[in-house]
Amino acid sequence: MFVKAFAVGGLICVIAQIVINFTDLTAGRILVYFMLAGVVLQGLGLYQYLVDFAGAGATVPISGFGYLLANGAIKGAEKGVFGAFTGALSAASAGISAAVIFSFIMAMIFKSKTKKN
Image: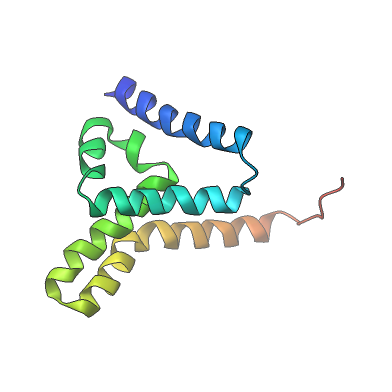
């Protein structure tokens, strides 16, 4: 199980590194494209196979966040249009809340500095 997760997660990172090395895309755009790739692949029903095969190797990268949003929206859409919007947010709420809370804690502990070039 660990080998499959490492191989799939590593392959996603290798693809991202190739995109970084051979394009002029900014890091923000690459993150958005990978997240949207997860949304599209889950919308087509393909990302679930990757998650079933690799587990955390497919859900931890940013494409896994897109998968999570799409999966929540698909399940929420069973309750109507409003459910499609709230389903995505409720599916990702734990991860988003953790990111906000831990970011706040780190901001309180450490003093921010400007980057020197």
